[in-house]
Length: 226
Length: 109
Image (cartoon, rainbow over all chains, first blue to last red; front, side, top):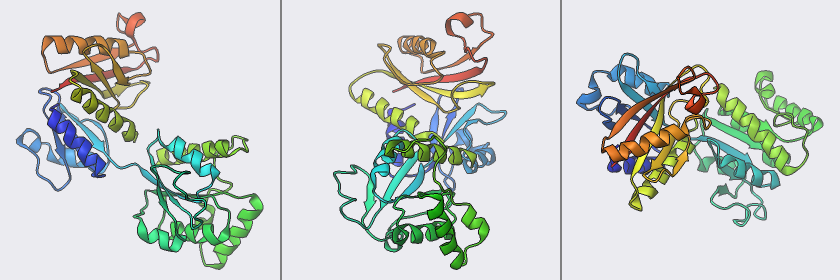
């Protein structure tokens, strides 16, 4: 691989560009490919298979060729509602996983920069905050304030925008009340039951770090299903 | 999906190159059976044998490091390596888990 190509990959990824890297295993020639862009003569004959692999985000040697393809894709966005103690541990765990965390919390005491370094924090109410970020069906929501004023609008937004994972902290009783409020707003039973609550996989822990671990474990498990 | 880790390795490779080290990039290009790491996993190696990242659970790294140092010495640009448990060197470098992997090593230059 050429040093220039390595630098280009790093630059494109720092700009959050998604692309594939193609390598001819017989010559070690590599190039970057983005859907819609032309391919060099080296790879032109396998255009259809290359595009298919890109669409499916599939890595590997393309059948009956000596072309290796590797997709460079963005990490999963995890929107955390509440800059609470659990969130501080979530941020730490996420560093070595394929997640990128954005925190929303209207309470400025919680969102102080000393508590969260190098993390995108939006110090605003959810209805305003969601206007400032891009979300899609590849986004996850983790609601941790257990304050209906903050969590409820976030859950509604996530349900309407079909987030791939929605989890909310709170006791069984809190969740029963929460479901009732969503029902009154017209959300379907199927949508409501898709919310993971109590949030996280069962580890039995009660401390902030243990709860964060159980949440991040559930996120890993759910993201590997899709 | 574990792209972030691979991207960190590429950034590290760039840092090594900037400090005038010779760097080989190793990538898992194909796996069969129960090999430990998925296709696309990466590791970098310099001429002294220092390495970062991984291409297996520790089973074949030693051998990949040796091959990479040889690659730098031979002035060749790339080589395809294959490891499997039925290999006669199984006691030395084989995959204890019974899988088979192909690794592509290439110089970054």
